[in-house]
View 1 (cartoon, helix red, strand yellow):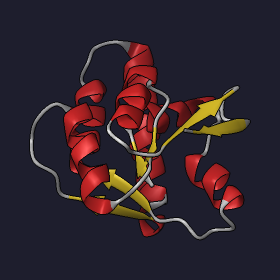
View 2 (view 1 turned 45 degrees about the vertical axis):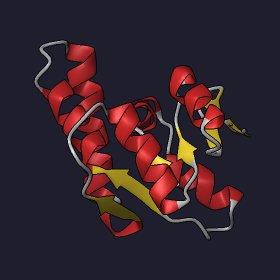
View 3 (view 1 turned 180 degrees about the vertical axis):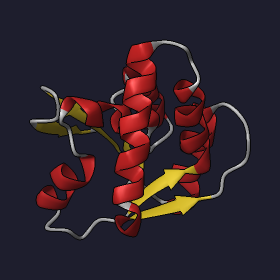
View 4 (view 1 turned 90 degrees about the vertical axis):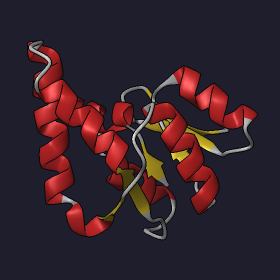
Length: 126
């Protein structure tokens, strides 16, 4: 399961993507984070906007704490959405995103998309 920036930034609001999906799949899921996502979060750290910076700090700490449960994949530079679509195709992975446009694009390209609803209390599979 490829995690995107929007899902990791939701961690600040008490959403735990690893917990939600592990319970859904009985722990039999691999979580992948692209370096493009890490770079996007790092960019938000220096954005100057308090809310974005705060979410980005929490997301980076979440990644650090859960590093043993995540596989970080080196990805090329480029638009993060494009990189994630290509990564999902290469890995045969589903995409876990809160971004509706990215979800719809993934579905059009034949990628399973998973989205949180209600602050992560439920998830939808497409």
